[in-house]
Image 1 (cartoon, protein in one colour):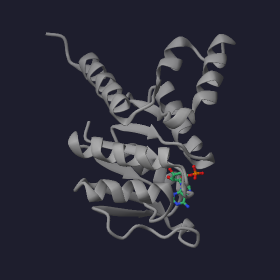
Image 2: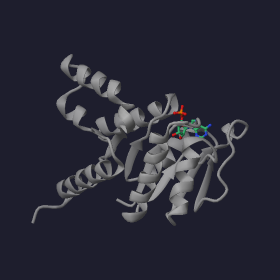
Image 3: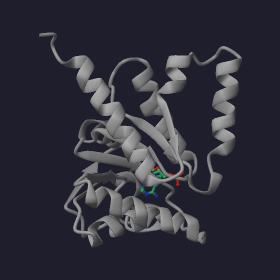
Image 4: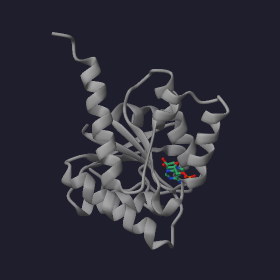
Length: 191
Ligand code: AMP
């Protein structure tokens, strides 16, 4: 794994738990020599995450659609900024650039992005690890919902296993590394 894509709320947050998670995640990425791929905005929780990685001398690629420039300014201090025409094009670039996908606490945009990525994994379009950073129990209800979907037969056990959930960046990135090496092991030709 070289690049981790973070989906993350575009609004500001007052909660110190989320701010701390951003700093921890940025530190873990830099220590593991992993770059960040994200939505490219300057503000919000997204922008704070990019700043934290840049402060740790990490690489950050931002991918932002031109159509949201009126609402959101692109971050100008990134390692690389890719401007796309559409939101769908942005998601395609993110999928191409990253080797793992994390949902931080966020809103509709964050949910859309992570579930689309999980949907592509379900259909076999990629084997990159995907998961939720469950900061301060933010995703507890979603985890309960997914467990219920499995109980009710709408999610198979193997599909449920695609969804990694951890409370700390270190645990989530360790789970990603384990998942990525088991996928690489399966692809290795038999001797
Ligand atoms: P939300 O969770 O609804 O705040 O949406 C945030 C997610 O959607 C991020 O991961 C971004 O990739 C994307 N996104 C939505 N709104 C914006 C915005 N104004 N600027 C940059 N990215 C955004």
